[in-house]
Length: 266
Ligand code: NAP
Image (cartoon, rainbow, N blue to C red; front, top):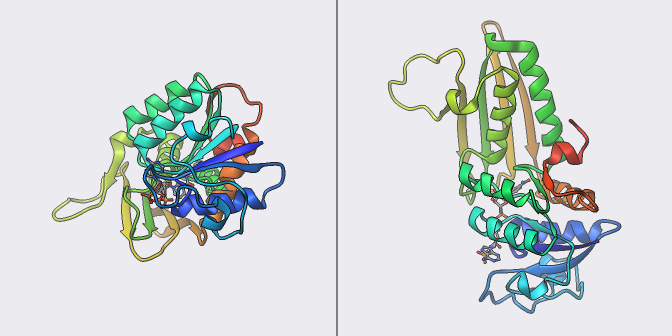
């Protein structure tokens, strides 16, 4: 199976190239950087620091259309949608790790998934996906009596907030409690906000330094608090998960899948 990485020179892109290099049964077919980038023509393995791989970076998907079966995309929402449409048009699968897609963009990605297989997950780490399952169980057992708050921290370069992972955690908890996150989410608090309402789910965001990604979900009531915490210490955890998703997609029918499908957690 040949995998292409778009955004190959990005923080995730380099980790993805390394993870593909380390994995069995798949190989790097193509690496795509920004049009006009000084890295066009540079060996992707050298870019990622794993030595020469014999795959040189190109500027567009059209430049490497015959060189890959599945695309891994950790870029920006607008670019991801263009790439997904390209993959559908050329019968290729796509793994999307990009976060910050709005509802309309998610709907467009769902349309693409009717034509070709898509794995879309705001967090590809195995640990986070297990955490989602633990959160659903906790919420079901604890019920409305416990206040839910989600605190997340990421590096100073992250452009969307709260993180896609924090939002997914909120959705999972809300669903388990029979709520709609859109109706009960409260993002940040400042000034005379009044007392907390019983069913709100609060989000707090920290952006600082080089934090790879930390999420803490509180379930608190009079007399006790449970915290379910996940801390990522290396982007390789996301990259390995994305490579696992790419491998899993081999031979899958068109459709929208997530990491819970890939890890058989449903
Ligand atoms: P990043 O370092 O900014 O990487 C994005 C890459 O996309 C950059 O290399 C950028 O190139 C490239 N790019 C932009 N426009 C392009 C174009 N037209 N053609 C080709 N490449 C283009 O960001 P990151 O930290 O890797 O994160 C990327 C995304 O993944 C974010 O949405 C982030 O939240 C998400 N993420 C998801 C997970 C997960 O598990 N799902 C984990 C980590 C991150 P330039 O550098 O030249 O601009």
